[in-house]
Length: 490
Image 1 (spheres, rainbow, N blue to C red):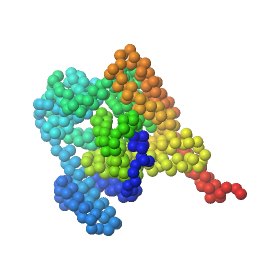
Image 2: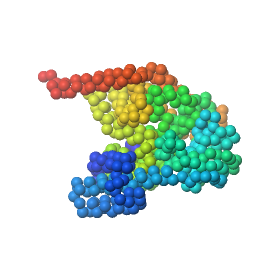
Image 3: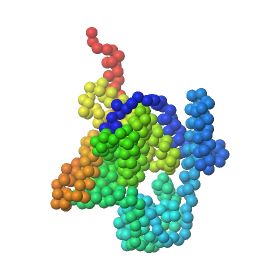
Image 4: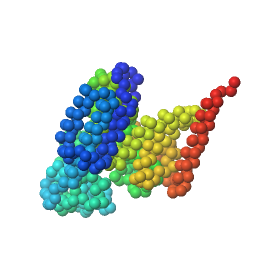
């Protein structure tokens, strides 16, 4: 965003309070995640539209006639009211599935993924989403389809198994469908989906010059398509603390905006904002509307709007505003692991990275080393509560692995998209030469993950590693503070 919007040159405007939006974001998260706490205390809580109207009217009255503290309290209560209502309504919709046989068109809402010898896909039928698993000829036909395309299917719809609800409910899947027929007839869907699918096909073609494993990692780094990654690669990245690299996030959005910045800077302020929003929306569709990309795109859109209006909006408020907007729009995001990790990592970068960078500077660590180390530690500490509670791991080796892998992965994210798109105009004989630097960079990232997996400690050893690093950091920080309090020698 700094490259695209020249933040320092924005006209002076109103500076938002640093903490109010952060508090509101926490309030809506708690109210949405634990809506059952408020259900008995709030009447007509199941009617989301009515609660939204009442909440907005209450907030407007508070803004007009109440003092500052009362206004904040009333706004927080309105957010609780609307957030809890939205959560209950979203779960109610998930629990309403149309059952029985079906024959007709179905829209593909998620690219098919390999599942043992078959394919697993999410289909939208009559406005509701169903998970389907197909084998044999049915699986082969579905494997060729992409998100947004429409196929003719026949099968029987049923409720979700209890063990699948927590994994697919955040994606608004309401049931399963056992397919008995998948027609070879299909359509492209809307022009917007067709354009995004065409770009993904071009990138997939450019990856054909690489071995299968490197090709799957390249597509994962550029557009988050990790469907064909071998299990050994997934385990290596998870053990090395590098899983975030193959999940598109704010870094991909930032590189996309940097690549477009020469064009954006030529536009007038509001046209620049419109062009940025269009580019962000299309990139979200290209990367399959992943929660982490949604968070990054909304955050970038708010920053663009702030620049256009001349507002100086802090990163904390940008993150909080994106959380509030997304949870209002889709309450199920608070149960999405990808969304939680994206928010946690961004919060760590905003809150912890500047503090760590300052401390490393006082310790005498060179800036070229202190900056990537601060970024890595800030992001890892931000997601640590989530990784510990969900995956029961937080590999200490991830600190070193990220230092070696992230800069090279950033090169793949920045250069991989434009170089991959050249395959649409270049002959296949030249494609191998053009993609050779990307292949080398992808292999480097994979080798770092494999080496880190081999040396990664587990269990008590990993805990001792984190304790040691924390102890050394605290000791060095106290030494620096002691020197600062004594002052320079006279």
